Length: 496
Image 1 (spheres, rainbow, N blue to C red):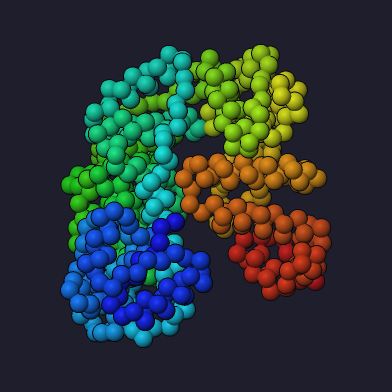
Image 2: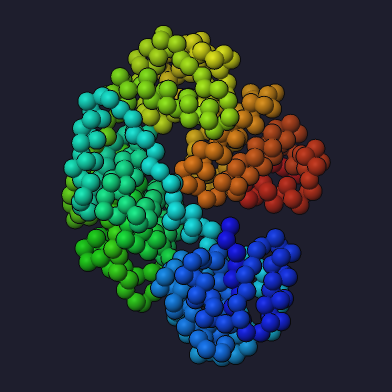
């Protein structure tokens, strides 16, 4: 993580902030004037910049303006002894993260810097993305057609609609289109419109101004701004709320949009690639998707084949995923016997490539030998085709982006693994590796909630729903378990 820069002509202010941040194990770098900070920006950037307004030479507002031109995602906190309205308005109009008047409480200042730091790390994670586009494997004729289409579109900025069943690799194709386009050096930003609550999706896409709604404590850039000059990939576009479809159509039509709560139009220089597993034509007929937006998105359509249409690719995909999974866990890669590969090739695998990848992750952890036979596969695969329809995430594997419906967190692993600490710890590591490699930013929060939920649910089962007894057995307080049950949406608890 990069250091926090402090720009203030008052040495005592610099010293106090340096010491307070050092106690938080946060690195700092200080400057006595804006000129020196500007010179340093030629070679490096901070994670957060804290600057006084009134200084000899260039002011903090001058520095703020320059930073926002060069690094729009860098949070800047303005501090000043001159807490007048004009300075505050000027700071926020210039894009400041927050405004802090001297004399300030040092603990509150550190808390504010922490919030800015979280925002900065979120921006850095989104904009950097995966270093390389994951390899798209396939020798089947259907995949060769996809590769040819990517090649034809390599020098184009045209809007592309990618269709295909869930798990066929639509985001991989979108990344490949970006990687081989003239925008390759600019950001690739991905958003799953079905995974974000309706009331938050507008802010995620277009950003919001400070005070636009309850909880909007700072101005935040949306995905369109983050993708400026690059590519915005919107997955599951068929699930976009109808009213937001109108806003998206306007952006595609005239290239301008407004932040939530904003009054100044922002120009979007963004290539839009969308994807869906749904039949958009039918959704248009059903009145669930705007026909004019459908035609805006459906300039070039690229259909991805299901794994059933490219069964000959299963052996090379299996080898790739087994090596990848073994590398993540630091173990030797397993091999599949010819009979096992033949067995997999005749399965339906409704989860497509994602299901096959999850299966290989399960095999890496759970299969007993180095050579995998049919009998080593999960029972839901070997006990008939009916069971195979539920195998998108085998019993011991949780899909990378585990859903949380209405605040209810699903357990990380089934109780069958409780007797095998090495097994569930390996799965936890595998789950974390998958989430991190996919660019997810809230890994600690998601997995932490899953872990807490699994423990509390198990304890409540053991105590027949008595939450006070469960709290004692878990070694936590009565108020803590009550709060956790409410936060995690756990049902079935009762007072002792």
